[in-house]
Image (cartoon, rainbow, N blue to C red; front, side):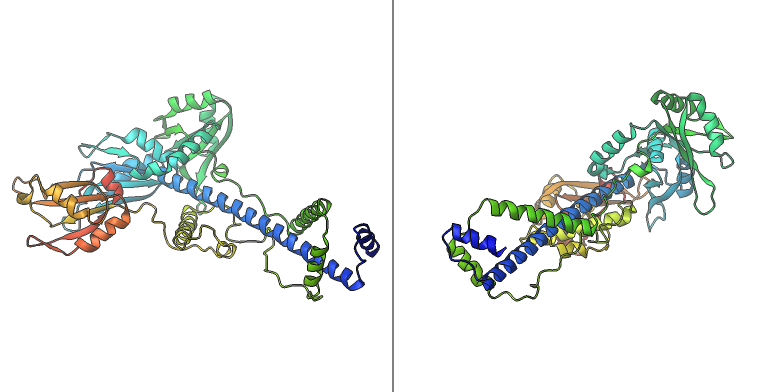
Amino acid sequence: MMENGQSMASKLGLPPLTPEQQEALQKAKKYAMEQSIKSVLVKQTLAHQQQQLSSLQVAAQRQRALAIMCRVYVGSIYYELGEDTIRQAFAPFGPIKSIDMSWDSVTLKHKGFAFVEYEVPEAAQLALEQMNSVMLGGRNIKVGRPSNIGQAQPIIDQLAEEARAFNRIYVASVHPDLSDDDIKSVFEAFGRIKSCSLARDPTTGKHKGYGFIEYDKAQSSQDAVSSMNLFDLGGQYLRVGKAVTPPMPLLTPTTPGGLPPAAAVAAAAATAKITAQMSNRNSHVRPQLINSLLCFCAGVTPARPTLPVVPQVGLVNPVLASPPSLSAAVAAAQEAKKEKEEEESAQDGTGQEMLSEQEHMSISGSSARHMSTVMVLRNMVGPEDIDDDLEGEVTEECGKFGAVNRVIIYQEKQGEEEDAEVIVKIFVEFSMASEMNKAIQALNNRWFGGRKVIAEVYDQERFENSDLSA
């Protein structure tokens, strides 16, 4: 090596390097190589981590979309009907996770609407198709999607597109005594069946009354839906419809496994070596640069320089490296945590997330993505105070706190009697939730015309569904 160095020096007309200079030069090259390897490792780590984070974000978005697809809004419910009646009417389409009915604490009656959440999106889709405008308790009920479905519509469309690649149908209201083979023997009359399985309770081992059938041909699935929906099988009317989601393993994208640490180091070293060779091939050493380099290297001790600790690729961030098939709550909580960190980073004027911050992400809190922007003012005016100027006055007053999208003045009769009391509610929709919060803080418990005003947040879904009775 010294001969090569001296030969190069003689060719350039430079004095030969001393042994001390040669040793310092070797240390400098070694240090540069270590720095190059570290740099490549950091880049690979960040790229790998970003890939995992993107996969988790996609999984969380799909889980939120699935949660929305499992819910239906039920309106125009007769006030004497209870939760049991709603459950009985909607249970044939699939297992119900929950029924959310709002109750008036004064009258002890519900407010005429409910949200029904199923275990699977196909059950909600069938209920939506078959229960809208059905007579229940003397009224035609209204069944629709929740108002916040628009936020997840692109993902829902994507899931539907993926589902079309499979000739799957959904079968519900299956008699408890029927088995997978019984269902298969009935439905195979429409074509060759690739798979037939009923969802089972992990505790009891019994099926839950619904399942999925996949046919070999699309025409077979269409014929099965048209022929078997509302077919009496074992004393129960089957509910049959097309699957609106792909099979479960495909609902969440797979996260690529981490690169083994040894392979990552070897790849980084090879990359750094090639980079160094290309750099040496295209450059010439000038005398003043050599002198500067030797002066710098003279202060380098044999001990390894202190470098920032870089986590090995494949072992970074155990939270993000977990499989994306998480529950909707966990995935949404992680997504909310990320959004909060991004917001704080933007406020500080920094658009980059530090590696250490990403490594210590934790699950906390609940998501507030669908925060309401609607405020309701109660006890502000009576029916006798309503005039043509009231809406403009409210808009002007609330405009001090932010942009007002609309104002609705609603008169609610407190009974069927002709002389029943009428209360007035004023709904104010702002463009942002923060503006609404400012208005509530300023107006709540404020006296107006001898009345103590009550300002509260109003549920966005109910407002969007024109339900002002809460």
